[in-house]
Length: 272
Image (cartoon, rainbow, N blue to C red):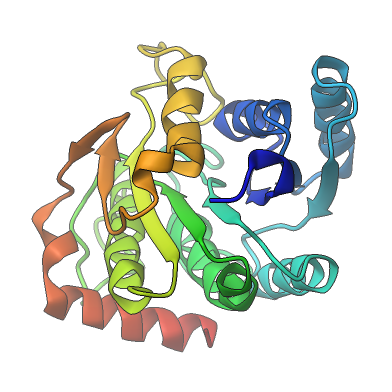
Protein backbone atom coordinates (compact mmCIF):
# COMPACT_ATOMS: atom_id res chain seq x y z
CA UNK A 1 0.00 0.00 0.00
CA UNK A 2 1.03 3.59 -0.54
CA UNK A 3 2.01 5.71 2.49
CA UNK A 4 -1.03 6.99 4.37
CA UNK A 5 -0.19 10.55 3.37
CA UNK A 6 -0.80 9.55 -0.25
CA UNK A 7 -4.02 7.65 0.31
CA UNK A 8 -7.64 8.72 -0.25
CA UNK A 9 -10.25 6.87 1.81
CA UNK A 10 -14.05 7.09 1.69
CA UNK A 11 -15.88 6.30 4.93
CA UNK A 12 -19.65 6.09 4.68
CA UNK A 13 -21.73 6.88 7.74
CA UNK A 14 -18.91 9.03 9.10
CA UNK A 15 -20.90 11.56 11.14
CA UNK A 16 -21.60 9.29 14.10
CA UNK A 17 -20.17 6.47 16.16
CA UNK A 18 -17.72 4.11 14.53
CA UNK A 19 -17.57 5.99 11.23
CA UNK A 20 -16.81 9.28 12.94
CA UNK A 21 -14.12 7.71 15.09
CA UNK A 22 -12.60 5.95 12.10
CA UNK A 23 -12.55 9.11 9.98
CA UNK A 24 -10.72 10.94 12.77
CA UNK A 25 -8.25 8.07 13.20
CA UNK A 26 -7.43 7.91 9.49
CA UNK A 27 -7.13 11.70 9.20
CA UNK A 28 -4.71 11.59 12.12
CA UNK A 29 -2.58 9.12 10.18
CA UNK A 30 -2.31 11.60 7.32
CA UNK A 31 -4.84 10.19 4.84
CA UNK A 32 -7.23 12.26 2.78
CA UNK A 33 -10.63 11.25 4.16
CA UNK A 34 -13.88 11.55 2.27
CA UNK A 35 -16.51 12.00 4.98
CA UNK A 36 -19.99 10.82 4.07
CA UNK A 37 -23.27 11.45 5.87
CA UNK A 38 -26.83 12.46 5.14
CA UNK A 39 -27.03 15.75 7.04
CA UNK A 40 -24.98 18.85 6.18
CA UNK A 41 -25.07 20.27 9.72
CA UNK A 42 -23.74 17.05 11.22
CA UNK A 43 -21.20 16.90 8.43
CA UNK A 44 -19.89 20.35 9.29
CA UNK A 45 -19.75 19.45 12.98
CA UNK A 46 -17.85 16.25 12.24
CA UNK A 47 -15.34 18.04 10.03
CA UNK A 48 -14.82 20.74 12.66
CA UNK A 49 -14.31 18.16 15.39
CA UNK A 50 -11.75 16.22 13.38
CA UNK A 51 -9.86 19.37 12.41
CA UNK A 52 -9.78 20.48 16.04
CA UNK A 53 -7.93 17.29 16.91
CA UNK A 54 -5.97 17.05 13.66
CA UNK A 55 -4.97 20.53 12.46
CA UNK A 56 -4.51 20.50 8.72
CA UNK A 57 -6.62 17.36 8.26
CA UNK A 58 -7.48 16.77 4.60
CA UNK A 59 -11.22 16.20 4.55
CA UNK A 60 -13.95 16.31 1.90
CA UNK A 61 -17.66 16.23 2.67
CA UNK A 62 -20.23 14.21 0.70
CA UNK A 63 -23.93 14.21 1.53
CA UNK A 64 -26.17 11.36 0.41
CA UNK A 65 -29.15 9.53 1.85
CA UNK A 66 -28.30 5.88 1.23
CA UNK A 67 -31.94 4.83 1.51
CA UNK A 68 -32.24 6.05 -2.09
CA UNK A 69 -30.34 4.25 -4.84
CA UNK A 70 -30.41 7.42 -6.94
CA UNK A 71 -28.57 9.25 -4.15
CA UNK A 72 -26.05 6.38 -4.02
CA UNK A 73 -25.43 6.83 -7.73
CA UNK A 74 -24.96 10.56 -7.25
CA UNK A 75 -22.49 9.94 -4.42
CA UNK A 76 -20.45 7.55 -6.55
CA UNK A 77 -20.45 9.98 -9.46
CA UNK A 78 -19.29 12.86 -7.26
CA UNK A 79 -16.48 10.85 -5.69
CA UNK A 80 -15.29 9.50 -9.04
CA UNK A 81 -15.40 12.95 -10.62
CA UNK A 82 -13.26 14.50 -7.90
CA UNK A 83 -10.87 11.61 -7.19
CA UNK A 84 -9.45 9.62 -10.06
CA UNK A 85 -8.04 7.10 -7.59
CA UNK A 86 -9.61 5.77 -4.39
CA UNK A 87 -7.36 3.73 -2.12
CA UNK A 88 -9.99 2.41 0.27
CA UNK A 89 -13.78 2.27 0.49
CA UNK A 90 -15.22 1.60 3.95
CA UNK A 91 -18.89 0.64 3.73
CA UNK A 92 -19.85 1.53 7.29
CA UNK A 93 -23.20 3.34 7.06
CA UNK A 94 -26.11 1.36 8.39
CA UNK A 95 -29.28 1.06 10.45
CA UNK A 96 -29.53 -0.98 13.64
CA UNK A 97 -32.19 -3.40 14.78
CA UNK A 98 -34.60 -0.86 16.26
CA UNK A 99 -33.86 2.59 14.86
CA UNK A 100 -35.38 4.25 13.02
CA UNK A 101 -38.95 3.09 13.31
CA UNK A 102 -38.71 0.70 16.25
CA UNK A 103 -39.93 -2.77 15.30
CA UNK A 104 -42.10 -1.51 12.44
CA UNK A 105 -41.20 -2.70 8.95
CA UNK A 106 -40.15 0.21 6.74
CA UNK A 107 -39.23 0.58 3.10
CA UNK A 108 -36.61 2.60 1.28
CA UNK A 109 -37.28 5.23 -1.36
CA UNK A 110 -37.11 2.41 -3.93
CA UNK A 111 -39.61 0.19 -2.11
CA UNK A 112 -37.11 -2.25 -0.60
CA UNK A 113 -37.04 -3.35 3.05
CA UNK A 114 -35.14 -0.51 4.71
CA UNK A 115 -32.34 -2.37 6.49
CA UNK A 116 -31.60 -4.56 3.49
CA UNK A 117 -31.55 -1.40 1.35
CA UNK A 118 -29.30 0.77 3.53
CA UNK A 119 -27.05 -1.83 5.15
CA UNK A 120 -26.50 -3.94 2.05
CA UNK A 121 -27.87 -2.72 -1.29
CA UNK A 122 -26.40 0.79 -0.93
CA UNK A 123 -22.93 -0.61 -0.26
CA UNK A 124 -23.30 -3.15 -3.05
CA UNK A 125 -24.14 -0.46 -5.60
CA UNK A 126 -21.62 2.08 -4.30
CA UNK A 127 -18.85 -0.51 -4.49
CA UNK A 128 -19.79 -1.61 -8.00
CA UNK A 129 -19.82 2.00 -9.21
CA UNK A 130 -16.50 2.88 -7.55
CA UNK A 131 -14.60 -0.21 -8.72
CA UNK A 132 -12.94 1.71 -11.60
CA UNK A 133 -11.32 4.25 -9.23
CA UNK A 134 -10.43 1.51 -6.74
CA UNK A 135 -8.76 -0.47 -9.52
CA UNK A 136 -6.92 2.67 -10.64
CA UNK A 137 -5.42 3.03 -7.15
CA UNK A 138 -4.45 -0.64 -6.72
CA UNK A 139 -3.28 -1.95 -4.40
CA UNK A 140 -6.49 -0.81 -2.73
CA UNK A 141 -9.01 -2.14 -0.25
CA UNK A 142 -12.74 -2.54 0.32
CA UNK A 143 -13.83 -2.92 3.95
CA UNK A 144 -17.42 -3.89 4.77
CA UNK A 145 -18.50 -3.24 8.35
CA UNK A 146 -20.74 -6.20 9.10
CA UNK A 147 -21.66 -7.97 12.35
CA UNK A 148 -21.71 -11.31 14.12
CA UNK A 149 -25.46 -10.70 14.37
CA UNK A 150 -26.43 -12.54 11.20
CA UNK A 151 -29.56 -14.25 9.92
CA UNK A 152 -29.97 -16.52 6.87
CA UNK A 153 -31.51 -15.02 3.76
CA UNK A 154 -34.89 -16.43 2.76
CA UNK A 155 -34.83 -15.96 -1.00
CA UNK A 156 -38.59 -16.51 -1.13
CA UNK A 157 -39.10 -13.43 1.07
CA UNK A 158 -35.96 -11.31 1.06
CA UNK A 159 -37.99 -8.17 1.80
CA UNK A 160 -39.48 -9.83 4.89
CA UNK A 161 -43.12 -9.14 4.14
CA UNK A 162 -43.96 -12.06 6.42
CA UNK A 163 -42.54 -12.60 9.89
CA UNK A 164 -40.73 -9.27 9.99
CA UNK A 165 -38.55 -8.23 12.91
CA UNK A 166 -35.86 -5.59 13.11
CA UNK A 167 -33.40 -8.14 14.43
CA UNK A 168 -34.04 -10.51 11.54
CA UNK A 169 -33.86 -7.68 8.99
CA UNK A 170 -30.60 -6.43 10.42
CA UNK A 171 -29.13 -9.93 10.60
CA UNK A 172 -29.85 -10.85 6.99
CA UNK A 173 -28.50 -7.51 5.76
CA UNK A 174 -25.26 -8.14 7.64
CA UNK A 175 -24.92 -11.68 6.28
CA UNK A 176 -25.53 -10.29 2.79
CA UNK A 177 -22.56 -7.96 3.30
CA UNK A 178 -20.29 -10.92 4.04
CA UNK A 179 -21.62 -12.87 1.05
CA UNK A 180 -20.85 -9.87 -1.14
CA UNK A 181 -17.36 -9.66 0.38
CA UNK A 182 -16.59 -13.28 -0.49
CA UNK A 183 -17.91 -12.70 -4.02
CA UNK A 184 -15.79 -9.58 -4.45
CA UNK A 185 -12.65 -11.37 -3.31
CA UNK A 186 -13.15 -14.01 -6.00
CA UNK A 187 -14.00 -11.46 -8.69
CA UNK A 188 -11.06 -9.17 -7.90
CA UNK A 189 -8.39 -11.82 -7.37
CA UNK A 190 -5.19 -10.71 -9.05
CA UNK A 191 -6.27 -7.07 -9.51
CA UNK A 192 -4.64 -5.70 -6.37
CA UNK A 193 -8.06 -4.81 -4.90
CA UNK A 194 -8.92 -6.75 -1.74
CA UNK A 195 -12.24 -7.07 0.09
CA UNK A 196 -12.74 -8.01 3.72
CA UNK A 197 -15.55 -7.72 6.27
CA UNK A 198 -15.61 -7.52 10.02
CA UNK A 199 -17.61 -7.42 13.20
CA UNK A 200 -15.83 -4.42 14.72
CA UNK A 201 -16.87 -4.87 18.35
CA UNK A 202 -19.88 -5.93 20.41
CA UNK A 203 -22.48 -3.34 21.41
CA UNK A 204 -20.42 -0.19 21.07
CA UNK A 205 -21.87 3.03 22.50
CA UNK A 206 -23.48 4.32 19.29
CA UNK A 207 -27.03 5.35 18.39
CA UNK A 208 -27.47 2.05 16.51
CA UNK A 209 -27.14 0.01 19.69
CA UNK A 210 -30.31 -0.15 21.82
CA UNK A 211 -28.70 -1.87 24.84
CA UNK A 212 -25.90 -0.94 27.28
CA UNK A 213 -22.46 -0.92 25.67
CA UNK A 214 -20.16 -3.91 26.14
CA UNK A 215 -17.24 -2.61 24.07
CA UNK A 216 -15.55 0.75 23.88
CA UNK A 217 -15.83 2.62 20.61
CA UNK A 218 -12.04 2.61 20.48
CA UNK A 219 -12.05 -1.17 20.04
CA UNK A 220 -14.20 -0.99 16.95
CA UNK A 221 -12.20 1.89 15.49
CA UNK A 222 -8.91 0.03 16.00
CA UNK A 223 -10.24 -3.19 14.48
CA UNK A 224 -11.65 -1.41 11.43
CA UNK A 225 -8.58 0.78 10.97
CA UNK A 226 -6.47 -2.39 10.95
CA UNK A 227 -8.32 -3.67 7.90
CA UNK A 228 -7.68 -0.34 6.22
CA UNK A 229 -4.02 0.12 7.14
CA UNK A 230 -2.24 -3.06 8.25
CA UNK A 231 0.51 -4.04 5.78
CA UNK A 232 0.25 -7.71 6.80
CA UNK A 233 -3.22 -7.73 5.21
CA UNK A 234 -2.01 -6.62 1.79
CA UNK A 235 -2.72 -10.04 0.27
CA UNK A 236 -5.68 -11.01 2.46
CA UNK A 237 -9.07 -10.97 0.75
CA UNK A 238 -12.46 -12.56 1.33
CA UNK A 239 -11.93 -12.69 5.08
CA UNK A 240 -14.36 -12.11 7.92
CA UNK A 241 -12.95 -10.85 11.21
CA UNK A 242 -14.29 -10.67 14.75
CA UNK A 243 -12.44 -7.57 15.83
CA UNK A 244 -8.85 -8.37 14.86
CA UNK A 245 -9.30 -12.16 14.86
CA UNK A 246 -10.15 -14.23 11.78
CA UNK A 247 -13.66 -15.67 12.17
CA UNK A 248 -16.35 -17.53 10.24
CA UNK A 249 -19.62 -16.02 9.17
CA UNK A 250 -22.86 -17.98 8.95
CA UNK A 251 -22.60 -20.98 6.61
CA UNK A 252 -24.72 -19.42 3.87
CA UNK A 253 -21.93 -16.89 3.24
CA UNK A 254 -19.76 -19.66 1.80
CA UNK A 255 -22.47 -21.32 -0.30
CA UNK A 256 -21.73 -20.52 -3.99
CA UNK A 257 -25.34 -21.12 -5.03
CA UNK A 258 -26.70 -18.77 -2.37
CA UNK A 259 -24.15 -16.13 -3.26
CA UNK A 260 -25.08 -16.42 -6.94
CA UNK A 261 -28.77 -15.92 -6.09
CA UNK A 262 -27.94 -12.87 -3.99
CA UNK A 263 -25.67 -11.49 -6.70
CA UNK A 264 -28.35 -11.74 -9.37
CA UNK A 265 -31.02 -10.29 -7.08
CA UNK A 266 -28.74 -7.40 -6.14
CA UNK A 267 -27.98 -6.60 -9.77
CA UNK A 268 -31.66 -6.74 -10.60
CA UNK A 269 -32.63 -4.41 -7.74
CA UNK A 270 -29.84 -1.88 -8.26
CA UNK A 271 -28.94 -2.14 -11.93
CA UNK A 272 -25.37 -2.50 -10.69
